[in-house]
Amino acid sequence: MITKNISKYLALFFVGFGLAVTTACSNDDDPFFTASEDDAPRILNTDIPEGKGGEPGVLKNIDRTQNFTYEAIVTPVNYTTVSWLIDGEKVAEGLSIDVPVLAGDHIVKIVATTTKGLSTSRTCKLVVRPLAGDPELATDAKSRWLTIGTTKTIDCKNVTTVEKVFIGQQEASNVSYASGKITFDVPEMEEGEYMLSIQDESGTRYGCNWFTISKEEYKDPGIKETVLWEGSVDINWGDANVFISAEQMANVSVGATIRLVYEVPDAEYHALRITNQDWSKDIVPQVDGFENQPNPYEFTYTADHKAIADNNGMLITGFGYKLTKVIIVEGVAPAETTLWEGETNINWGDANVFISAEDMANVPVGATVSLTFDIIDAEYHAMRITNQDWSKDIVPQIDGFENQPNPYEFTYTADHKAIADANGMLITGFGYKLTKVTFK
Picture 1 (tube, rainbow, N blue to C red):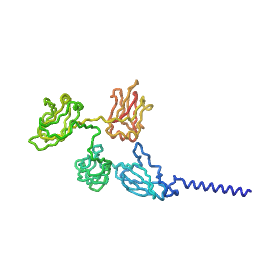
Picture 2: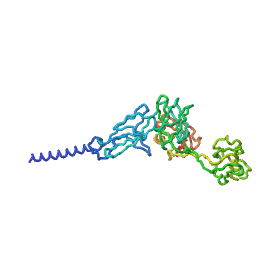
Picture 3: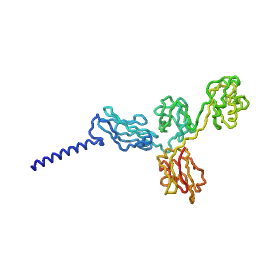
Picture 4: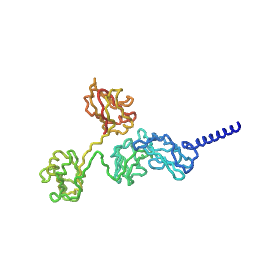
């Protein structure tokens, strides 16, 4: 009886042990467990960051002298091939990667594909920093807009020679460098975002980050263009001219730029005059030798001009040119972005407003940062803008803050950005209620 019971317990023990072993071996968090080629692939690395706001997270931040190295952990490992893509180009295959990468912000895609064709991927960002003294190209949006089929000139620093310019994998033609400017012809290629790089006479290639390739000309987002008139008229004094009504001109603001696009055909002479409907008051007195003027021809619309045109329209006349378009160019106030909004009675360390480094990363150099506030009854009024640990000031302490403009504004410099991107921005002081922080 005892022997039978012992045998029964031993049997139960081995069954339980077998289940435990089976469970342990089947843990799909272990990349090396035995899985079949019919299983869906998985990338198991836990250090690949999640993206935020539609942007992939940064996997690594290295300088350009360091190779990008990483190892993928996948399952089923025996039936999976890993491909590595940087900016859409396949650069390696296998569980690990070890490659040099040009300076810039790159998109890395890790693709795991099984022998049965099942696939999964993870996308992240690789930041490769240039070295001090590396070539730098202008970073404003207009400089980084390349119109296909045109000649582009870009300001640059830390450059002595440029032998080649690459847009993605495509080489530009007619490359030259002089007086701190690179000039090249933009090739025919697909529209999109491309990494641009330059190569000097020694053969060293430098990454210069992202540029936009488009068939369209660059349009300044701070500028609005309105076509007042479009057509084709060979201007000939009273016989052929272009009239824009007072009703149309009423919508044109003082300070706008009026732009005339034209062609100059062969003629005895070339002259422009802009007047009102009955030719009694000139907006632009007669310009002889009009063929020597810039094309398009532009002038600033003044209050005197508006008084004439709002009353009796604007007539464009003269001789010896073909008018094709009249455009109004007006500035548009930049969009304002709110960084923080609420009500805080600022009181040094007891009550202040902190804006994180992540939020401050969205503020570009050159932006105007605005603080809206109310002055409250207090012994004194002071404002200071610093970083999270109070170690580096963005705006040193301002005493007598009640005498400052409201909103208080300052221009966000590269030095400010270096401080805030590293450790956030803390608004402190005493004797005022902060209600809003914006930038534009």
